[in-house]
Structures are given as structure tokens and as C-alpha cells.
Amino acid sequence: MAGESGSFWKLERVNRRRTVALVVKLILVLAAFGLVLDFLFHNLRFSDEKLSGIPIFAAAAVVFAAARSLRAYFAGADIVLGALGAHPISADQPKNQVVIDVVNEMALAARMPHPRIDVIDDPSPNAFAIGRDPEHSVICVTQGLLDQMDREELQGVIGHEMAHIRNYDIRLTTMVTAMARGFGALSGRFISILLSREREYLADASAVEFTRNPTALLRALEHIAKNESPLRCATHETAQLFIVDPFQRADSGRSYEQFINEVTRIRLQSDKAEANRDEEARNFVAHEYPRNFEAISSHPPLRDRIARLQSLTGTTPARPASAVTDEQLRANWSGSVKFVTHLATTDPEVMANAMQSVLLATETGRSLLQNQTGGIQIRVQTTTRSGVNEKVYDSNLATDNLKREPSGGTEITAPDSAASAELERAALVKLLGTVTASMRPQEAAIMPANADRAKGSRGMFLFWLAIAVSAGTIVAALAIR
Image (cartoon, rainbow, N blue to C red; front, side):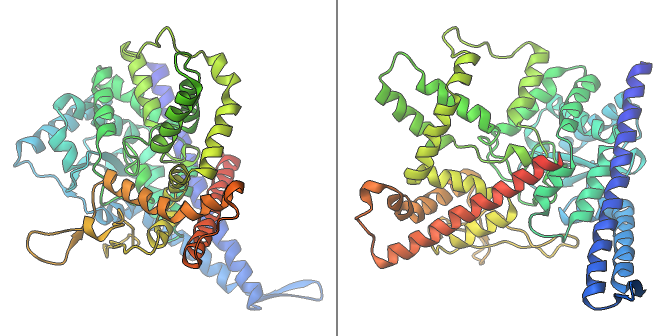
């Protein structure tokens, strides 16, 4: 027990240091920016090898950074909760009372004060914890979690969030989320670089400790993984708070390594002709291309988290006797990579999937995707809630897929996640058709009409711009880690 307690104190100290480091880095970055402005506007200058003047912009930047840090520390949780539309839970509904009881039970198991409980009126099942310490913490659940989870699954989810509170993960994530607002569209993905993905594995293990039931969280994560309803209120700046990344779809948990391994397994089937194997592998690549960049995600792959919990319960699926060995996977890795690369530069559908995955990795890319896919009209939903930037929700890429409210008003809602993905892919396939055709030497003599040529040029620019942005982001993430 003493060793266990010591490990928790160690985690708390690490998170305290990371929070302080975050504030110091923000102050230094803004101070440096202020100094640059001071030299540009001649508030500071070198005269006779001496520095003279008053660093007005640098001083203002330091004051601004300090004020922003204090506001994030003392009011960050309320700012974020308000931006997400959360409100205190009421005990007048049986389902609400169940989650209240579960939170109280998990607080006793973790030997912590009872956190406040908030609810977000959203049908997608998810949850997060926020606050500066256990005495000022909040556990927020969605209405979808209350409606879809049984008591055992709720215990697993709440136990996971209690672990984040106990380990002081909430202080770091609250500060990062509150302070990163307004620093550009890419800030959401760079938030992920600042946070350790190991914290999710540790919280999963602690949930098992609190509930004494390894299947509770396992069943909850499997349930969430199958859900196709997107979380409407989430932004890329708040995604790292949730127990499962709200922008991951059911098929997004596959990492690129797993994806290439599966391609290899298909291409090594000994009971099928080579042409049939290649066709099956092509169909798999076209429809199962990974939907997120694991290298820059704040969450570990959902499949990996589920696999770890399955190992605790002894329910890890056994590998079939005829399965491809690890040695075969390694030996054929480069061949499968070349196979996928060839498809991504010659097959419009595969190329569209690859580019879609790149664009969806950042909010900027998402917006670019919405506004450049063949000139199709897209409705962008924004919010004026305090403390949150304008955000983009699922795009409508065809006017016949828009659904109006029964009241006859003009409010438009987006199609579900799977439908949006298919519409995006269809638009990209159409846009990139002329691009891929121009890449094939044997078709070089067949030139499209002027209008199609212009569209192909725009598609080519969009493709390489997306590749450049994603490559830069991944390199930065790996360098900082």
C-alpha cells in the first residue's frame, strides 16, 4: 500500500511540474514575441553597442500571459464547461441518480472528495474530468452515456475519470485547454503533443483497481467504439479531455502499423490466386484507410486500450493457427507499403481516402476539405458561447442530404458520421479523378477538357498541401516527444 501511495504522489508531482513548465513556456514565448515587436517598432534599439529603450510590447505580453495563466487556473474549468454547454446534473431522473450513486462509490474507492457532476445534452456517449485539484473537480458525462450505459459500464467510465482526478491529470489538461484557445486552428493538434498518451493507459488500469472489475471499462470502451454518432459540442481544442477522442469514428482506432500488417496478411493468403489477393487488398485499402494520425493524437489507439483490458480478463482473441507470423509481416512490410503507395497515387478512391485522412487530422484541414471539395455547398456551424472559437461540425457535401427541423424552420442538421464520411470521399474521388489520370504515363496523351484540367490542378494543389501540412505536424510531434 505504501508503494502504491508513493506512485500516486509521484504522478501528482510530475503533473505539477508539467503545469508549471507549461505556464513558463507560454510566458517565454509571448515575451519573445513582444521583444521582436519592440525591435520592429524601435521601442528597443542598440546604440553605441548599448541597448536602450523600454520593452513595452514584451512587458505587455508577460502581463497578458500571466493573466491568462491565472484565469486558466482559477476559472479554466468553468470556461471549458460553459463552452461545451454543460450544466449541473439533476437528481429527478432515475438514470441521473444512478450516475450520482456511481460517482459517490468511485470517490469512496479512490479515497477522494466527491466531485461535482455535470451533463452535456448530446446523444453520443462520452465523459471527461476537469478542474485544478480533487477539491475543485468536475466529472462531466453526456446524455448519451447516461442513456446507453448500464451500471457496470458507468462504473468503468467514472473510475477512469476518477483516476485522472487523483493523478492530477485534470490540472494539466484544464490549463492546456483553457490556455490554448485562440492560438490558431492547429492548436488542438499541438495540444496533443504536450500530453502523454500513457496517462490514458494508467487511468484505464486505475479504473480496474477502483471497480475490481476489468470487464466494466472494457465493455464501455467497446460500446463507445461502435458508436457512430459524433459529439456535436467538441472541438479539437477540447478533444483530449474526453475518455475517447470524440473525433475518432468506429474505424479510426486502427494504427498505420496495424493497417499495413492487415494488407500484408491479405496479400499472403496461400489459398487464393495472386490477382484475387491483390483485388481483396485493394478493396481493403480503399475502404479501411486509417482515419486519424496516431503519432499526434493525445489518445492511444482505442483498439490498443481494449486489447490491454482484454489481457487482464483473459479474453484476448486467440490467433488462428494459419495466421501470418510476425517474421512474415516484417519481411513483407516494404512490399505492402509500396503496394499501398502505388494505389494512393493511381486509384482515385484510395487517393481520396488518404487525403481525407490527412485533412481530417487538423481543424484547418477539415475546413479546407469543406470549402474545396468540388465547389459543393457546405454549411458551417458556429457558436457564440463564451470562451470557444468558431468551430466546424460535420460538413454537408450534398444539398439533398440536408435535413430540416420538423418545425419548418431553416435550421439544418448534419448527416451522421458515416454518411458525412461517404459524402466527403465521393466528392474527393470526383475531384481527384483527373489528378490520378494525369499521373498515369500510359494516359498522358489523353488530356481532360479545360474545366476538368482546372479542377485537377486544384486537386493536385490540395493533395500536396495536405501532405506537406501533415508531414510537418508529425515531424514536430516526434521531435518534441
